[in-house]
Image 1 (cartoon, rainbow, N blue to C red):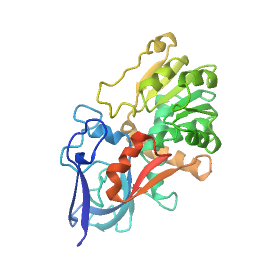
Image 2 (cartoon, helix red, strand yellow; image 1 turned 180 degrees about the vertical axis):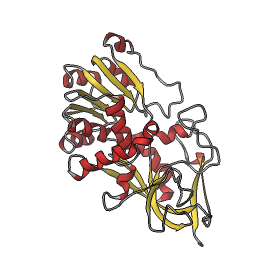
Image 3 (spheres, rainbow, N blue to C red; image 1 turned 60 degrees about the vertical axis):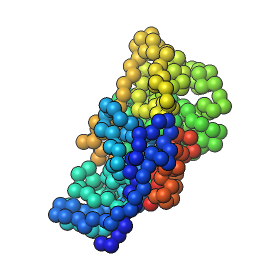
Length: 333
């Protein structure tokens, strides 16, 4: 095909925030597909906090990226060559294609997407893994009920924005926790949250007491650490806490900080449960159908923060941990 593929490999296991020395960029010819294979030209790459966990060695819900391997990442793109009966040239597809220009695939885990229904980056956010995480995390793990008071951390991120909007669709009171006045104003004015707490400028514990006077029924946690501890002090009877992520802890060089206020679970007969979106893979179509319907009806808004250029990947990834993105962070190849 006479095409060159740039690839980012994991060169070392990071200590703290990933640095340039943790990556190796190379260029190789694009392989011709064999029987049962096809080649995807990657157009957009998803940048997710989970990627930091995949870089660590040790037991987790998914095997770590090996040293020397192309960095794992969800992406969307176009089939440009195919010897696979299920995928034709011109098909737009989504899959775990990695941080590279082109991906050779056998079709496992790859789904076709329709750019006429939603722009391609939306399939990495609201109609992708973050949207699935929000949908099943809130409705299944969080056991959402109409009228609940819902609090979500990292509320201006890819998962948090969808969590809050689903809760509003289900007639709940929603309080978001985010960093910065602009993000908080956007959550309330554009996404319809009832309130937003700026953790950079406000006392989170005090603000939660003010905005959740009857307690928190569902706390959807994306950050862990001190904010999780603050939420634990304001639980309602029978509260459900969804442990989705802990971005405040991912780059720590000291042991992960556990919740000091966990006895609130006992006092309030509350539950705290972890969720991994891959457990719901068989039901993704169900979630996409409902989320897509809400998008089409204007009841759900999707926002993508797009950074351009594969070569910007190492620095763009760090935006997640600096809180610089609003909505879904996507790398346009």
